[in-house]
Length: 383
Image (cartoon, rainbow, N blue to C red; front, side, top):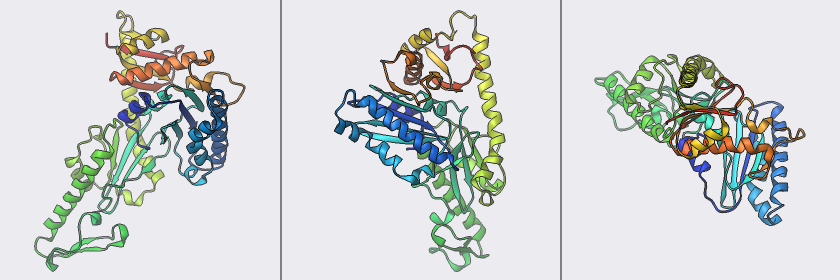
């Protein structure tokens, strides 16, 4: 699981699996010498979690619980394909690993629930975006942030016209023309009667199937989506699109000639303006509501209580750095037994507020000190 949506995060946050819950998080590097440092840091996190777990569990049970984390440590291949943040969630019933295009705190947490607050920055639209590079010969979906994008596997989505249109089944005068698709299948178009209309119909059919497949992939997503492609392809796809967050602006050029990094370079300026405007609008609303009789708050206890009661409409939590990272721990990565360490009590309150806000249909925005400089969180209340 990599392309997280609100439902995925809410399921993790509300996990009722039996037994202890372990959350492991790490900011990661996409390439370079930082990859080896990431693996070493992951090893330290796993060992830290193990030391906490051994205080209340038998060693064989601890080893079984942490086995997926150790398997990842000992497999070099996945570390070559990381994004900006890595998280793994483990219970005796199973585990889930996610890579996200946004930085996470370095953290190992053991408790009766998962730590999911840092993942919620993906829901606000101010941390990441989606990019769809579309042509008749290639379809690529990517997610990313200010940093380079990462391609998402599309197992059940056709990624070229040749995946949808078979070369047989038409007369010679209506033979099709397109460069080879996946698997090297070459398809040719002739100039007979009706060939242009037939090709147009095939392209529309292809884009319709792409849209249908992406509808399932993007279900529950709220991030802005940038289209990259030739004008005729973008226009045709836009007519069929059902994803609500597609930007009106698009990059109108062939994506086939662009690398992943180049796609990020041409798309980011469009996304950055949208994200900045959304963030500014929300922060301005918070400040406009100050002094209106309790409709906003930056008191941690008050916001936490309001979240439990379902009264938080929008929650802002600090993320630069995360609360978990600001607690002095002798230079070692934080290893926390939830509910027992007073140093992290405020962090747990922030986590609880985020979890309850999400459960009651509110929005969680990971931001810096732009809202209230001296508080871990702030909220716009429903009432």
